[in-house]
Image 1 (spheres, rainbow, N blue to C red):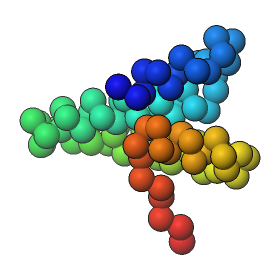
Image 2: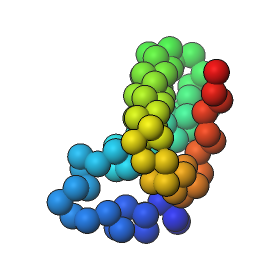
Image 3: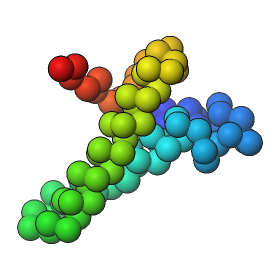
Amino acid sequence: MVRKSFISVIPQEEKKGSVEFQVFSFTNKIRRLTSHLELHKKDYLSQRGLRRILGKRQRLLAYLSKKNRVRYKELISQLDIREPKTR
């Protein structure tokens, strides 16, 4: 898995607070919730939670793309996330 090796690259001090780690953990939650919702289609509370996490991740990625485009591109490719559509 690429995702596990990616987090080990981040230094120990800035792991949990860094934007990359937060996006990584949101991505894991999103994948877990998505697989849960495939089984339980009418779990509307989990759908709401998924939408909230998606919004948080989207805002963090927007922040990162403004601040550091190189780190943003690396993160997108390593986590295998699509780039959001621009308006």
